[in-house]
Amino acid sequence: MPLNNKVQLIAYPNRIGSTLRDLADFMEGHLGDAIGGLHLLPPFPSNDDGGFSPLTHREIEPTFGSWADVERIAKHHDICLDLVLNHISDESREFVDFVEKGDASQYAPLFVDVDAMGDISQDDLAKIHIRKEKEPFRTVTFGDGSEGRVWCTFSERQIDLDYSGNAAFDMMAGTIRFLAERGVGMLRLDAFGYTTKKIGTSCFLVEPDVWQLLERFRVMAADNGVEILPEVHDHPSYQYAIARRGMWSYAFALPPLLLYSLLDANSHYLKAWLRMCPHNQVTVLDTHDGICIPDVEDILPRYHIEALIKNVSERSADPILRRSAANVHSVGAIYQLTCTFYDALQRNDDAYITARAIQLFTPGIPQVYYVGLLAGDNDTELMEATGEARDINRHFYSMDEAVAALETEVARRQLTLLKLRSTHPAFDGQFELHYSNDSSVSMGWRNGDHTCHLFVDLNFRTATITGSNPDGGEELNFRL
Image (cartoon, rainbow, N blue to C red; front, top):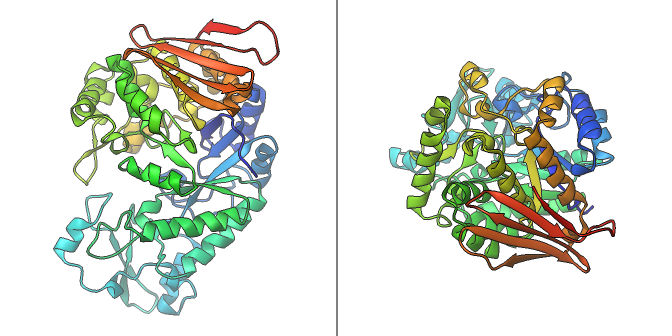
């Protein structure tokens, strides 16, 4: 079933209120036709990483609710769920059985046998794209007392699956069928780049293996009427390669591009990207993972990227942002800015609304993160309590707090934009990027007699919308 060309909300199952029922009530009672879809971050039983260490994809964590709650939302909204295909929880039925029985377990072929891969030298280890300050292996003691090593790209609670054979593919094929039967129309393929493991390589996005894997998942999903959205933060060329292969790509270059454009009042690089970006893409300003820097390499020159990081960290009034903005991962590079997008723009309402307007007019399906919807500030208390830098942008809202945040002026201005994007027929037509000087952006959509145009002045951070009235009345002409 084709996806709705409408705004999607990105939300956890328990951070607007505390249950899926609360989230559904909030969407129905307060967002209405401003939202046409939901990217529901993992609602599955999990023992690590905010839901991304699933014991299974076939159950809903009971404290969140049930599949009936998901199906309720799916009646009126597209549903996107995460398919965590790189790994599974060490408390999963499959891994527990494997640890107990070793190679005699029916699930043994699901897991990477590191010791069977041959000698792994220090040079080999140095090539591996790692996500932690230690080698990506875990030693397991089996039920008979013997030991073996499995692969753990992320935490030791997250056990990587082995895609060199068919066992993991077969398990995921059944999972995709199950999720499709419950109304899921899109699957975000989480961390797919780490599935390709060949000693002597980076074990990350290894070609052609990674494209062969994605094609198998594309076909499995298509057979069940489901679209796929592969998730990767790396050089932007990968997004173009994904889009060329008939899958949805992520416009992860857009958030840092917009930060640069607004903080420097320069639209040159943004417009260059808009001229060539895929149209079968999902656009974001912020997500649960922060604002990633590798996605904009070779789109923004390096000296502008370095200046952007310095600008965001030094000009913020929040000292915690200065500390966490340069989140240095073990690969030895600046990987992401861990802050809310609202804070990255120094909580300037006009700049924030301008950024959101440009996102919504950019080709693709726009997704709006729940903290961004509510123009949330950095949650430094949560970050310090958990020790996870990304939790600065993962606030737990009570229902009353979320409703109150939605009543602020900046949130109401956003809702006006979201409703326009989700309901105006012009957005089902053709994208147009018009000439403008390097301190402005002029862009719009045309669908027969329906038009909707956005003009942005980056110096004054103003956004003006003009166009046809879908109801046939006086033409639209208003400043956001």
